[in-house]
Image (cartoon, rainbow, N blue to C red; front, side, top):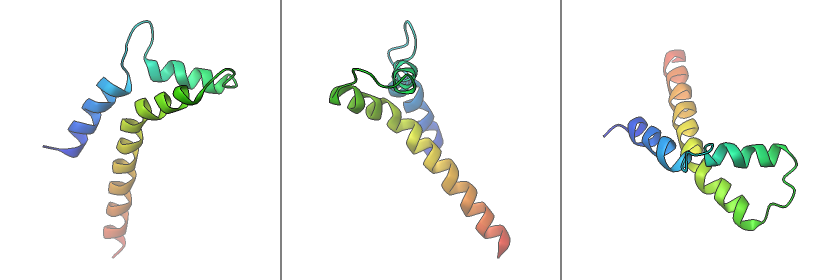
Length: 74
């Protein structure tokens, strides 16, 4: 199965769950941008857990772009 399909599926499920009232990761990012007041270790771990699929997706995209750029130069 395509690595992008699996990663995007993970982003839409684990990365954004729970969806109501707003995606969990969005709430965590707002909290961090607001100064992260009151965030404990479990909140940071939770942010990492929900953010990992997006980090992996960005890694795949950057790696494939760099691979294409290198192959076009040679």
